[in-house]
Image 1 (cartoon, helix red, strand yellow):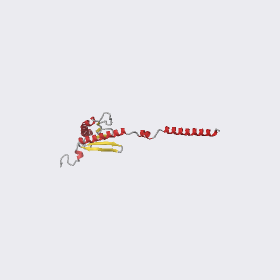
Image 2 (cartoon, helix red, strand yellow; image 1 turned 120 degrees about the vertical axis):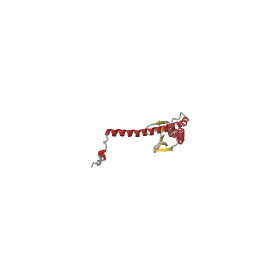
Image 3 (cartoon, helix red, strand yellow; image 1 turned 90 degrees about the vertical axis):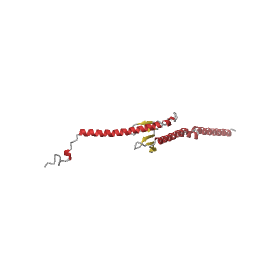
Image 4 (tube, helix red, strand yellow; image 1 turned 30 degrees about the vertical axis):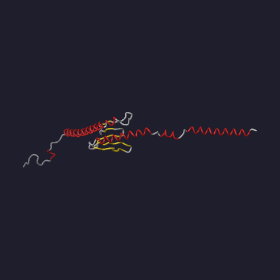
Amino acid sequence: MSDGPNIGRSVAETAKPLRLREALWQARIEAADRTGVVVDLRDAEVARLEILNEALDPLFAQVPDQIDLFDRGLSKGDTPRLWIDIVAHVLMGRDKRMYRFVQDTRHGRIVLAESHDSAAIVKAVTDYVARRMIERERALSVMPLWEQAEVKKPPRGLWTFAFGFIAGVIVLFGFALLAALRTP
């Protein structure tokens, strides 16, 4: 009694063996699909950052030319970023729709603002630029410590000269007094 040609055989025996070449081809197609999604997400991030960059144009048009604190630019690496200056930049959050304005400090990265709305990030960047300009003004108006030290104490050579002059006058006066006492 024959139940048919495949009855009693295992699945491995009935399945047509997949050739390695076909498996590699299938894996490449799947990787290309995943890469395409990643590239599309990165392109979307870059596009959103470019829109934010254009929204910041009026702000940076108002910054005087002699102030060179800010070097705005878009980097399109693994993590696209819109740089405001050397320590602050905007990047997209994990959901790729949220803007995250961060600043790198010696104690680590701090988040200055985070929002889905580009207008909120423009305001945060505007506040940041204003604070940086005020810091620059204060730094330029404060006298450096080495200049403050020179103003507070007189030059060292002046005291040496004054002490030597007074000592010389006293010695000469003493010799003159002795000479006057010895003569009959």
